[in-house]
Each structure stands twice: as structure tokens, then as C-alpha cells.
Length: 254
Image (cartoon, rainbow, N blue to C red; front, side):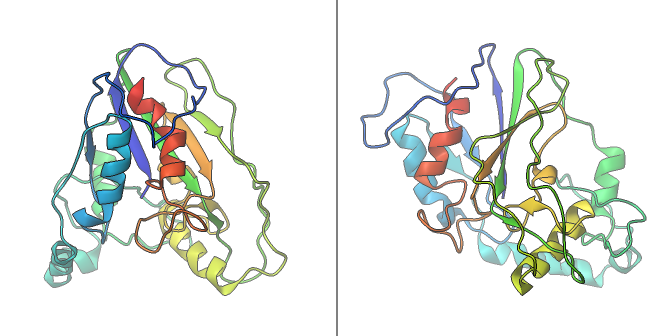
């Protein structure tokens, strides 16, 4: 999962101050956070993130979701619209794959295309700020042949609120090996179904570019994995690992 934050505040300073989770919670009252579990996750996966945010004085609540709840998605298999790719959804948020891209299949069988055409875009005002946090954990690779893409995907920050802003907070100058691994090729196929290109950077599930929202402050964190499941706080940190939270929690405190 990528992290998307929306807050209402006039002030903004991109510098990340240093915090220490072992210190006493601040006395200032901050806006509470709502945590929505990612696909396949349950509420309990985010308990540690709740505790970490509490250390910063940010109260949070996790939407109640169990892993069994996700099995209800399988009900779509009996809907003829699923096989025709013409499903119409309940309100959801995701990425539409590019139309006509060779080898790209709309895994939601029409839901993403419906959302793109019929749902309202994000609303920007001077009082409403969107911050999108993307992870740059592994670069995908094409299924056949070698990949050759530029690892530096950041663009300069602009002052205009309507222009997308991107900042790579930590860049370890990663590069793709000459012979991509099976893992990179496998992950690349997942990236391709989302953004239309396999040899791009992402958090292992979501491509970096797809985690960013046009017009928002888009921040990329190097080495950050997609989900709390299968992650740890040292070799494979995710967005909710304490050291990673320290890099984006400022946006909840400002």
C-alpha cells in the first residue's frame, strides 16, 4: 500500500524535523488519522503503526477488515460483466491501466476504467493539502529481454499547488542488474498491469508513478516495502515501520 494523506492547513515546510519515538507524546493536539487496510490485510496488521503514531501524539483508528472479507471479491466471478470487462463498481480508488497497451489486462475487469470516467477528481483548495508517499523498494523487469530504465525518477518541486510535486527523500542510487532476476520479472508483470510498464520502480506491488496524485505533494521514500505482511523494520521496512514513519509523519503534525 502507498500512503495518502489529506490535511487542512495553510503552513508548509518540506524539511523533515527529527523526532524520537521514545520521547513523551507532545501536548499539542493533532488531527486524528484514519487507517484503511490494504488489499488482503486485516485491521490487526496495523496495530504497531497505531502505537507509533500515538508516540507522536496522533490518535488513529483502523477500519475493521478481516482477511475473509476480501474473499467477497470472488463473487464477481459469477457476474457475466466480469468476463466482458464491463463491471461497474461501488466507489473505489485505484489506478486505471492504459487503454490499448499490449500485454496489459484490466485486472478489475472494467472497474478502474469506470472510476476514471465517472468519478470526480481530487479537489484542491488553499486549505486542503494532499500528500502521497510512495515506496521505491524494487525495480521490476520485462518478462523477456533486459530492462534499461533511468533509476532517477524524481522531478523538481514546484511552488504552484496545481503542479505535481515529487521529492526523493533518500536515494541510494540503485540500479538494475544486467540479468534481471525471476523476482524482478515477476514483480514487473504486476507493475505492468497497473501502469503499463514493467521495468519501473515501486514498492513491490504499486509502481512509484501510480502512487502519486497529480497536483499533490508526492514524496518517494527509498527502500520502503508495500505491506506490513512480509516486512520487518530492518531489512524490509514498510510505510508503517518506525524509521519510515519518522520521514512522513511531519505532514500529520503540521
